[in-house]
Amino acid sequence: MVGKNNKQNDYLTMKLAGKQNIWLHTKDIPGSHVVIRSDAPSEATLNEAALLAAYFSKAQQSSAVPVDYTEIKHVHKPNGAKPGYVIYDHQKTVAVTPNRAIVEQLKENDQAHTH
Image (cartoon, rainbow, N blue to C red):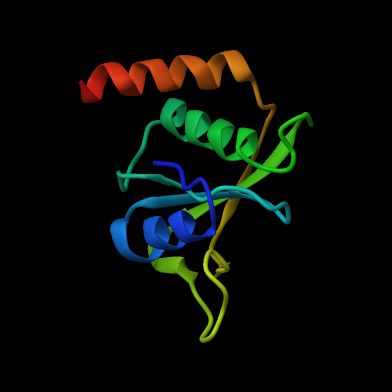
């Protein structure tokens, strides 16, 4: 699941996701929150989610974009913070290069599963 704006990011991360789900976001770069609705995703799923996080960020045109990931239980919203702003810890980092063709393929696969 991918948040497309601050309010969607807030809802996705703080309300919709389970505590054991995996949360991803580009490291120190503005972008979408991405959540994997699994507590033990495969390496392929983790890489696809990281690719989505990088693609839907300010680093879309970059290569080797660092994407942090951690369990939702390690993601916190400070009191009074604006929508979509969080702090997190216990993260690991993976580097991915955004690829529009792969993102389009993931969208098609998702639409095929939801219809």
